[in-house]
Image: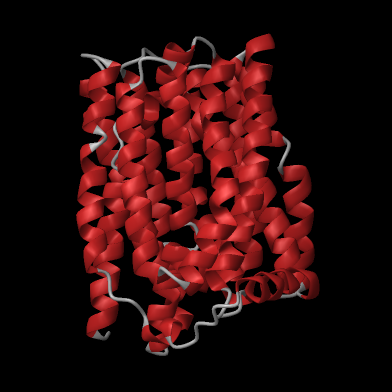
Length: 389
């Protein structure tokens, strides 16, 4: 392993850890609903994040590929994230939540595709791109380890006030701003810059038109992520029906730990079982666990949701690796941004729909739909794409 790989791997791991060290995540929907006055408006904060990310996705992807490059884009994302969380923490009204959501959408768009491109290009520069899924699993696991630690600490802080939890969550974003100063830009990226923006966009879109495999992978990822992210953000509203509020952070911490283990060992699991078995079996098992949890609606439900989180880590790395293999080098971050754009639009629609269903029925029914609906679409796609691989 070269010095550049070691530096970027360590920095990416640390950056991801502090990016997701957010104590408020387990009670986010509860805090947003409290400030805004309803579950629908509370979920609309997530929708605004997604819509803002949609608006900024392609421009920031182009900036990453052509002007700011990987390091500069990560720095801009860290700054936007810091200001966004400060807005959430201060928020005396829904307007401040909405402003923070727009900035968080901007931050996510700067990160989208850029960190993956930084890692992939760093490895490719040293002829180790075939190990991407192994290193990416380790780096992304830091998100979940951070969420685990933040949830444990948040369980204590939430006993005092939601505001305390929110302000404590701002500090790690400042740490991210400092870490972002030390990334090493891959030389192979900066050597191939072409500043014709419209030609760059056309070439990126052509990849989806001519690469059928890329197109179907993007569709499957969009559908899956839209519902998965919605159910993840909304689960606290369901679990609150079963356990006391102080236990929400502890349950979320266990989910994060389970996901972290899935990410950490994803590379080895992918090498052993292959993509087809991982996608088909994990989605079927996850669906069974999730629906059982919702139907039981008792003390065992949160633990079934925790067990299911192991599959999330493995399948996430598998999906990302397949996409990176289909992306062209010159448009890598922009192609990733187009996929994220579709995911953000999908999430924006699904989040509002699930929030509305919860308001007119109850959180259990809304979560059941969020778990079951996407499998009808993505399982046939993965079966068709991967069964011969």
